[in-house]
Amino acid sequence: MRFFIIFIALGLFADENITKDDLDINNSFITKYEYGKMLYNNPRGIGCNNCHGDDARGAKIVDFKHTQNDEEYICSIIAPDIKYIEYNNFSKKVNSKKNENLKFEKHQVCDKLIYKANVMPTYFMVEEEIEAIYYYIQNMK
Image (tube, rainbow, N blue to C red; front, top):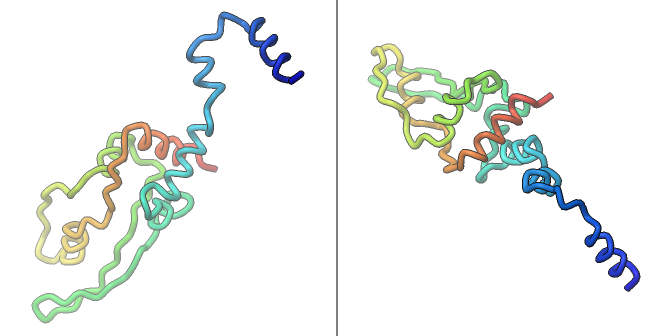
């Protein structure tokens, strides 16, 4: 009871000059960096770190064998380094449902196969989530 009375008394003498921005900053449950880290590690099932690595520098995901016209190709799926990517490219790729239509030379069998497969999952993120992940990547230590 004593705490309740003290709490109400303090409320009566609170600073009337507190703005909405002050409340937003002080009432954040987690920081933008923490939010970005959480999303990077588990955005919608599989985390960015599973393919791009804990440091966002990219990593080889898998090697596989592909046969076309009785010729055998050894292909590698490699997640790119996203540490230094421009924000517009990053944002576009995170939510893209399919790749743009590129042309490949006849000898680029692996490149074409991997590109057409569109290995990058689509996460359907809002801009705030994309910004938080990008912020985390740019500021990770």
